[in-house]
Image 1 (cartoon, rainbow, N blue to C red):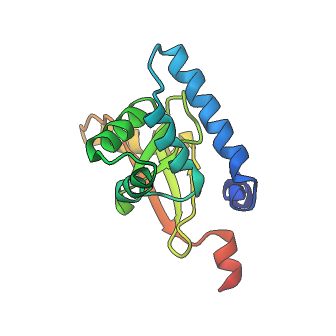
Image 2 (spheres, helix red, strand yellow):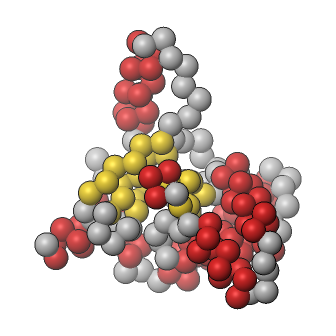
Length: 161
């Protein structure tokens, strides 16, 4: 099992480096899949990665309005594209989006979400996926996708309490 301090490590790191890496991976992935990485898609992905916390569509829309873009459907279409490309995940419990830590690699969403500071860590634990698939098969259920959202406290918030 991975060290949780590493999972939440981006909190103190250079955010611009994380953003730049995410954008470079997105450009490469779109090029490989012959998809257009338009200016609005790029900007939305950049905004999603800026805080290393889940961000809602309305928050994105507000920043884009400040950039001179005002069409809500544009934001939703960009988010839909980014999800389809595996560049962002939707966190249902927060009705928000977060950058994918494993773009281009098929995987299920498994997330540790801090209830205090809202930081998030994406896991990729095959045993969790296998347990879900086995339980579903036993029940005669065919899964299409699954997201696991685990609420709790990150190491920083735990040390403060």
